[in-house]
Image 1 (cartoon, rainbow, N blue to C red):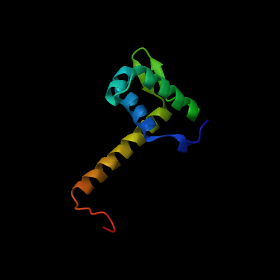
Image 2: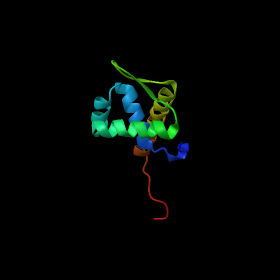
Image 3: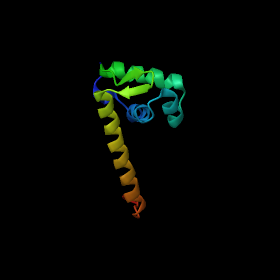
Image 4: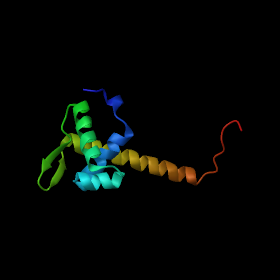
Length: 98
């Protein structure tokens, strides 16, 4: 199992995309990736964490409690980043020292 610091923001985005769309092809399209890349990366993330993030059903991918928590964290971080960008857009920020 990899330590959590080995997780990248793209890993969180991938998990959120799968949780939101419940299907790898739709998540892949949303992320601009190939379906096989999303499948492989999901396996790598689950292996690194040592936990299943999704249950695979005929109706689609359903987040486990761990997957749901990771997707919710990604949503909060994404919202915070968007809010920060909007705040910056409303300010005249000049580089320090120049």
